[in-house]
Image (tube, rainbow, N blue to C red):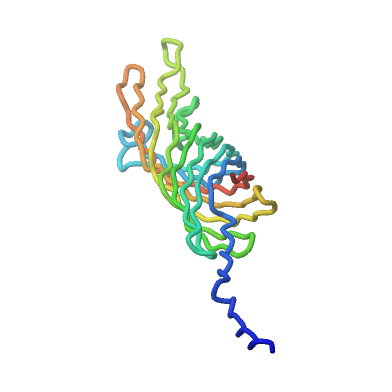
Length: 232
């Protein structure tokens, strides 16, 4: 006679739940390009080179192309949460220039001309499948030139004066973006950043008159750019 049939074994206890995919986790590198715009500068003639007291100001807006590369790392502790750090560097081709009202026929001009820039930022994102919506913020620095020149020709036959403040300036940036992982290792993004490097002063030695200071109050600018990343 056959013995009793064995009781069914509940195998569900031995089956582990599959881990949710971490499609955004890991190191990545990439390139970006876009446009910077609406960098507003207020310039003040602090020592009244071309106008008497009170302080006279004039302003201009600047824009130009921007391009560079980025490197970063994402940690995805939850399927919907992405935490990351990113650094990027490139060229900020912004340029703006304006003539001071009331200056002599040759003209007194103020201009800004940022160049090489870099950022170091944190990122917090919400992930859904192959999409990542994120905010970002941190440090922004640029080889930021502010210049003033007086093109009037003096009796000596030379330009009356010109000077520039061309130090590397540090400030901050905040923004956000949307990224799409369209292949296993490749993603496309569109990103917005606001940046600000603070104020500055340019002191211009004018021939036979002495030094005159011009204060630059830059309200910050905006960058819209696209990017392509490769994730390892």
